[in-house]
Length: 324
Image 1 (cartoon, rainbow, N blue to C red):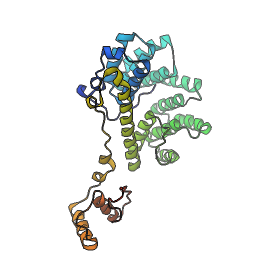
Image 2 (image 1 turned 90 degrees about the vertical axis):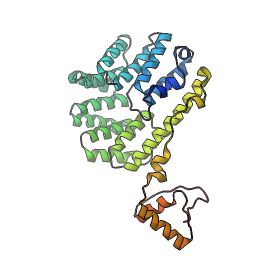
Image 3 (image 1 turned 60 degrees about the vertical axis):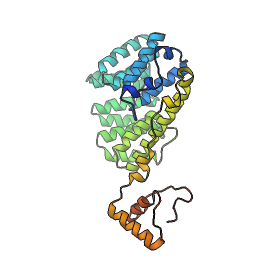
């Protein structure tokens, strides 16, 4: 289980998921396993780690020390930077059952604590024992790269990609470590492999990684698109969670407003700055040449962009002023 970054999270207690849905010990105890797991996954992907820890406390008070809860606890603690506690949790978990996910968290925590040889040993183990598993190979490569051995990391990933050329996780990891080691040519080559657009098969964790990668690249438009897709997915995940929780909490949509999908701020007319001089010149020209005394939404920004010699795609409904 990896520790993806978060987007659009709530940092105040009043806006927390637990508060919005009135999730307390009583309501948490009534959740069926599938809804309980849905809350855990939502909090891990979109929520704050402290919220996740609070929810885990509620579940333990009701259900006891379920083994899989330790995995979620380790991820939340890792996000908070409590690496020593992560190792303590992982040791407890592995005394009962060792999994690839627990070994991945162990390697990451060891590396964060500066136990480099031990971290490398775990990376060696998982890359050899799980040679066909993308998560194992990618984690090992990240460990090697973090230890300064970019060549070993890239060789491991390239060997894996020869067998699975279209593997998205391995491709993203290659770009990530190339960026971190200023291997611009390598990063650009693998960015080209991704192609345009965002695959619907991309997981939320992979999309988080892609967005972070694109923010470090020169592809500003692609970075914005990835950010918007993250927002869209968060809204959909929230709405799905809301539908699942309502029968057990009684909290309706009006009482649990979710994250807003802020499309206009990124790609709407407001995203394009137009100077007063540009606005005056365009308005005078449209009156003089076309007899239009008033511009419709988006027309000013579109015309200004074209006059600058830049490319733009403007989508307007019928009758909204495309002909001008």
